[in-house]
Length: 200
Image (cartoon, rainbow, N blue to C red; front, side):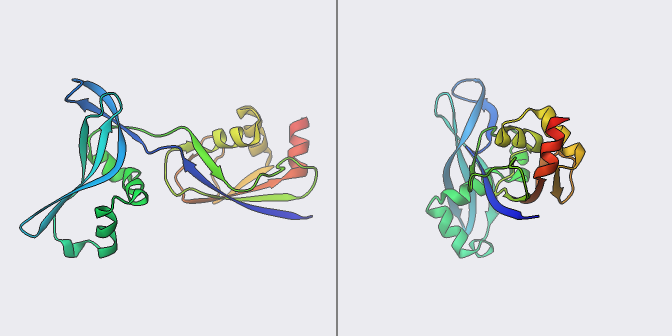
């Protein structure tokens, strides 16, 4: 039996929104990451924030990244990236769960995403398909919802395929309820078993 292997990278459409009180609106508002850093230096110590903006009025709010740290404690390349407002680094902090939780704001993870990788015939008649999924950022995506959208089937059909063994994962997870927190997850799809399960 032939085996086809593909790699998909799953990228969220935007960074998480942080819902907090906006002083200008005087209401709870979602704030989005502005992909810029603010760095203040006093007496050889640095305070570093990631800048957010109110989605309604544009008022800014700074999420603390580091307080009173020595420049020597930050890798030079990282400090240069902050000074240059490197978007990739900003995204890394914007998805860092401990940092987000310390902000005290309500976290709203993105629900839309892009899949970078080749198109596949996942339900072709023969062979085994393996898909290596890469998740550079954690955003609480449900695995069954992801498979439902990518394969254009119902969630009930995804559950049937999972329970029948037509779709398996490595590491092994419960496909019917798993929220993806891994940076990598492998899928194995037995195409003949898919065809059998879909007919039942």
